[in-house]
Image (cartoon, rainbow, N blue to C red; front, side, top):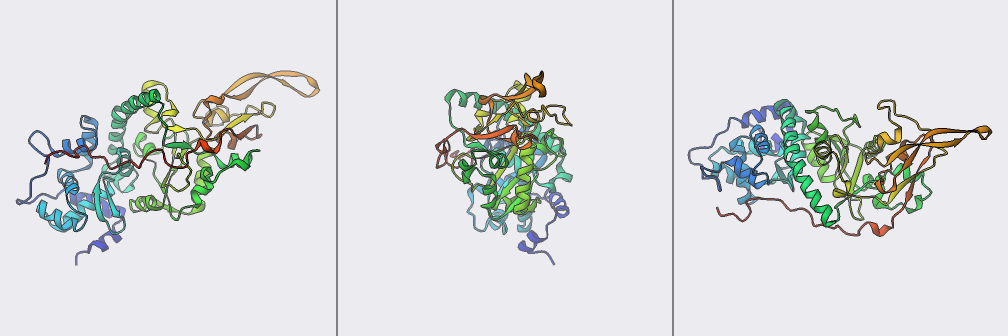
Length: 433
């Protein structure tokens, strides 16, 4: 006896998803299928969807779409823009002349591949194509471990090609424009709460910049695969800064990634992951206004991040001010306490090893020894203008020579968001049918 729709959703496992993807590849339109809007002899469905997603001229993105989706899948996704949320499978089945159970398989496949979002994630009611921005598709298609055996590592390689050819170049041009125009940023560096608790300015700590409060104010937590770290390593983990998956998702975002085969975790596990990320020197960022209630904590690095890594490779530099605003915190270093300790793995001094902003350097310094003898030894110094206030260096300093200080007032952080929530992008919006 065939499964009902609700039963299908309950029993789909990773192995069964591979069977689902195989089935979807065999589905064909019936002879009575309607014409697909915007598709013509000169513009196939792949070109239409590339236009809708803002990458109309990207051969790298076309190869990615062709690898991940069949023509019929994309035609179904494209039709979603013109039909009501109610009775979607029934309406699509008529338009495509495809059995309704096959339409349901196609929609579930699109959800698992990160191309569709449902208004109700558990019942899959009300699908819409395209998340808010290309990078949600980038994340959704790579964080799902059910795709690995079927589509990886080729999937990760194709995303990496697109990232360096399109995202990297586009980001660089946007960065130059934003730096010229001095536009404010929508995200702010998350300071390490451990360092603040040891600071003489701990009384300045606000709830909306306290990582503990960011974790505690939510009701659901999940650990998802890091799409950037999977992308650069073909699905493995070769990040030079961490061995852990440290993308924390909260509430409805957590529910979505759990349904895409990521791991639910506890509040305590979330806090432990947050603490370890700071100790690894990863750059956490949050919404740049006075709130702790947002859906994701991202921890970036210069070797994997889709914004950061292409700039370093292609241009030899990266300006953090394009993407982030500094936290209210900064570090100072007591050279008398510095012992110039080194990281065993990299051989670099520990504070330099974790600082991704090149804000710390070692200088030969005259040190007074016992008996008033002097000697020249390396000691750490911070360049204040380069410090973005992540405070990772302060969390790993064994002698507590590095101290967090609050150097900016509370009004550094706006009370309300600087930007409206990003709308669902559609490159064909307003086009004639």
